[in-house]
Length: 279
Image (cartoon, rainbow, N blue to C red; front, side, top):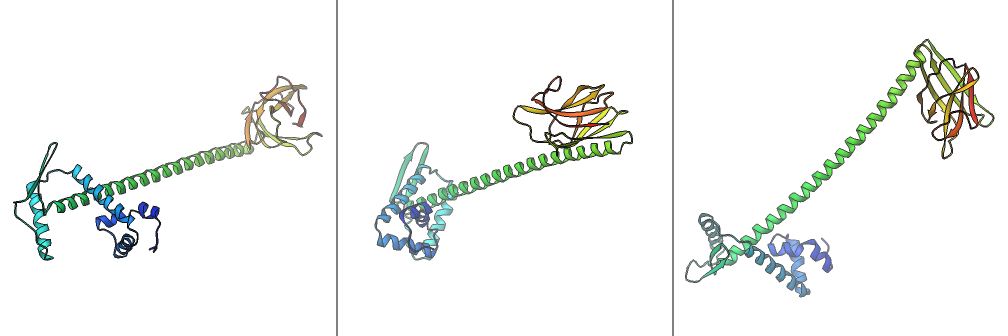
């Protein structure tokens, strides 16, 4: 334990309160008593703590059942007798205190014992409630953390399911004997651009995959065109990062091209063509 504590540490640590209640260790008691001897201002704090706890105990005091009172008094008398401390049993000097709804009779000798017992009970109750509150708070935080982890795991699972479904669809299209592969190669504006189409006329399904295009500028979007009898037909907008995306299946298409159009698409190509390819 530290040999010297500042006033803030003494007050915030609860060492003085523990000393008043008699629950400090031998080392802690020695420290407090040294402080009380060398720094008298701490004595005033100790007295204030004792008075506060005693006042709180009296404020919340209730008349105990007669049987409990007799047992406690008997135990106190036995303890005092064992330590050679005289305990007056004479009822000659009694103190009656009237409180709203409470009538309490105490002997002058045993009243402080009752106060001490009440203080201990109240403090233990408060400490117990604080401990339970902290345990409850920790449990709530742990539960919230587990729920957050479960949510994250569920989201990861859904993402993996979606990825697996995309892969399954791509494999099914590739393995279908009626599927035709169309490679779209880069134009001079983007020589390294590339895309692939998988088209199956019998199933009327067309997929685009392995798209490699420059990032679209803000307000622009890539659009796929099917060329039918030399005329472009809208085959759908797409995200260049999509690994496999279903697009429109256009009958009679003999070529495809991708152009950069205003966001939302165009009725006819208006932008630069980045890739194109023939069946």
